[in-house]
Length: 145
Image (cartoon, rainbow, N blue to C red; front, side):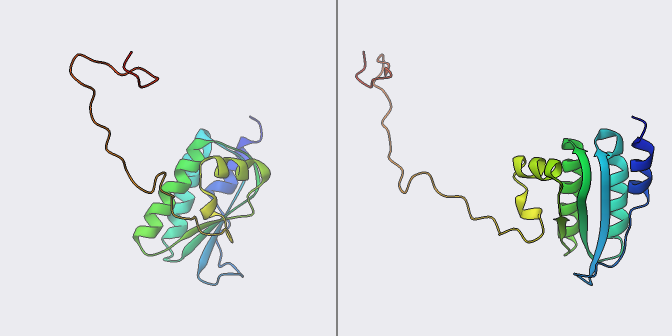
C-alpha cells in the first residue's frame, strides 16, 4: 500500500476549518483508502475537531475505499458529539463511501438527507395464539397432524 502514507498524513492533519456553509462547524476531509489501518487516525482527527465545541462535517468526496472500521469511528464520533449537544454530518460521500453509508443505514448522517421516518408497526393489532394442547404438536398446516 504505497499511497497509504499520504492518506495517513491527511487524516492525521485534517483540514479543520470553519465551514463556509455552516459557520459553527469544523470540517474534516478524508481521502483515499479508509480502513482498519487508518481508523485510529480518523478517530483522533474527529476528536480534535470536536474539541472546538462546534458541529463537525466530514467530507468524504475523495474516499476511494472505506470499511466498517471507518463507519465505526464515524458512529462513535457522532454519539460523542450528540452527547455534548453537537452534530456530525457527512458531506459529498464518494460512490464507494455512499454505498457503505447506505448499507449501514446511516443515510440520515449525509448532509441534506431527509430525516428517517419512524419504523412502521408490522401489525395494527396483536392476536393471542393459544398454546397447543398437551401431547399434541402443531404442524405447518395447522391441522395438528
